Image 1 (cartoon, rainbow, N blue to C red):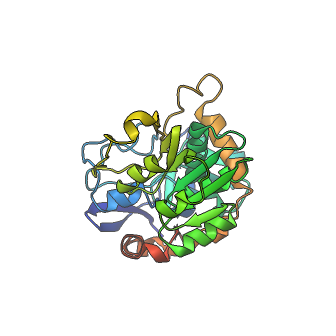
Image 2: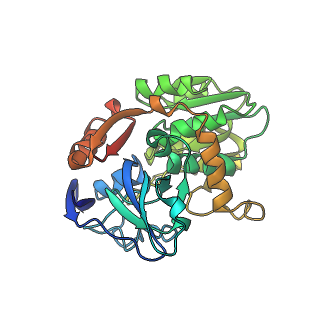
Image 3: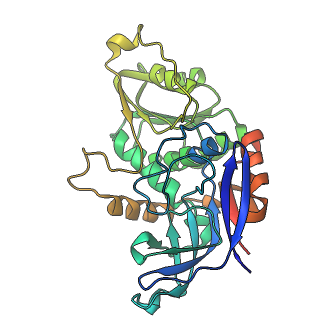
Length: 331
């Protein structure tokens, strides 16, 4: 069977292209993909053509190059088995299951330095990229003992953020999402309350609001809700990327005297505040260990073969209430 690769070709259009299965170079390995996870944040923005076309895909991921303009390969959460090694690679790599930040493709080449060996199954390992993002949000939020924390958005990365925060000795952890299915899972992962609006969340936050609010809904309008939920001198961690959409904020009222901090948080780099002790490898290793404790099966609502990727994106785009995490499979 030939190798197959997913391409984004236009707004709300994807296609699968075939090519020969590649042979590894002297320092490379070849991976046959078992599962890859669709990002319901950045990747849906690419699918909907809601990103600036001249933005680099990701300068820190070697497998992603060029800009976010059509046609392009995208995706960054692939899990598979090493099926061949180059002459200069230890043959013990063959047969190992690995994770890679790589676009959706049935086979791909990488170097050993580009992959992460994983000791659990492909359905769990496919969440590693999102688990690292969630770890980054929590690190940047720096929750302290007894604090009140709110998380806006309970998609995949929001739920993983909730699972991590639930391990802290917080006073309360409140999550917000419009979809009942996600709220139920959120409570199952440890949220003290999962509600459908910021107004309802405020009722669960004692005092003047949250000490830390994490905004991962991907909805620009939610940023103002996050600010409003945050108490005096609290912090809003903005994990969402809104792409080409803009967030209109009312900053002339309470915010002006609130000393609320707005902090951008993105996983491609380690915040300089942590860089003295942390690098990306250490953070990813932590995410890999913590992911082993999360019941990821409850997050997977659908699996589609790569050839039906268009149906997967249609589902996430048009019926988000039905889906949380969607994986692509490879025969």
